Length: 203
Image 1 (tube, rainbow, N blue to C red):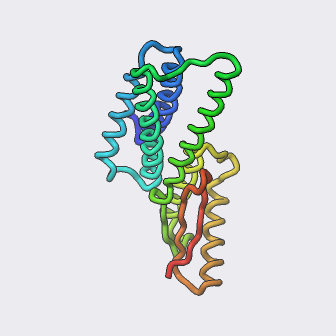
Image 2: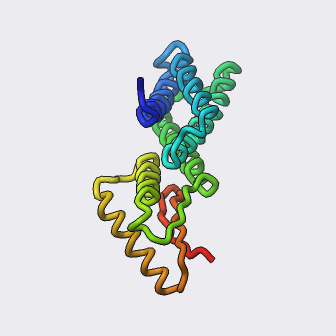
Image 3: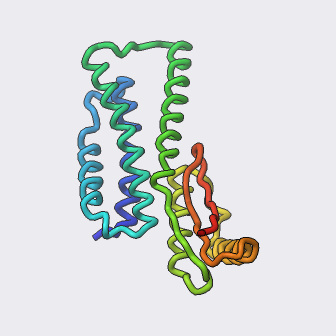
């Protein structure tokens, strides 16, 4: 039986594949819309929507991002299907087609960033005062940060668990000394399409 992380990875892969197959359908490369893969995605989204309590914080962050992206894509597909049924989709050739395709890709890219920017409401938050003793919390923060970067398509090759732990420990002690506080809140969020890790002093 697949683990939650494996199923979330499958969900992410299926959403990407759905977009590819819909693009092929609207471009005339497929005769029918990819309803089978869409049904599979809907089933997974419904299952984890009902079992949200079983997800860890990092998994919930990933699931929320994926469902936001999927909802945005579905809205785009629905509008295009309506245009296709009404016969308002125009077919272009040569240079004009390339120009229109480039404009469409740019628009969809902007829409994807808009979805990611919803991250303010989906931000992962964690408060700690002694990172060296709160290893589980720091691990959850690391997983949320890593997953957010992967979801946003950012490179994670240079990110290591040990260096991240050192950063959190150093930053926490630094802020506690500077601001004379006990608790430090860390927030993983997406700002203008980029993943940010913020350290805030808890009053």
